[in-house]
Image 1 (tube, one colour):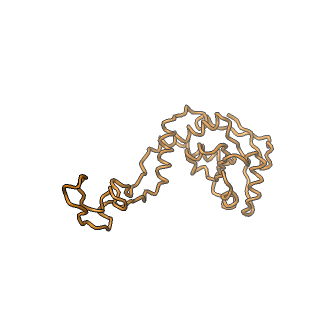
Image 2 (image 1 turned 120 degrees about the vertical axis):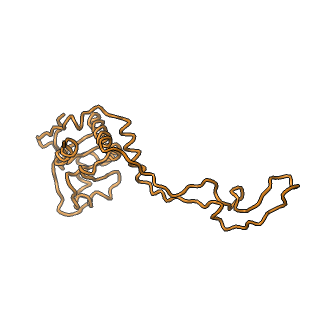
Length: 210
């Protein structure tokens, strides 16, 4: 599969890059995608939720009423979950939501996501570029030239570039990452995937290395 390379002005450069079928043209595995996205979202959770149970509530334990003869259920403490201000029954406790996935399965999920983007023609290859200084307006102009101003965009750089990252981090619906850090969730969460030219080779090294 060949894709034309465009420059920051949005015009084709006349060059093309070949996207390897082993990365952008596999048989997608939906279950692998589901597991990888589930793990990604689970790992984002702090798990610090906590509510007080009856043993942790500072309230009187004096018997509220006599045991029998009231016509109602017996009651022995204001800490009971039955009363307003009492402890919560089976409330949330701090826990770790993260879980393990095999590296091969995560690779399969990422390749499946890239394949879906390639099939839908939502991948664009941008000529290598750099910025002399962080300038959000210049970065926004590039997205405008590429007709991506109103879309959720994921820009994939071959390596970390501080000026580009600082220029684009404040823009809504825009995320900048590197080819080494690319993950399934970010790929699927974006409407358009912009691969900076050098990142294609990094992806090939990452996923096709024996």
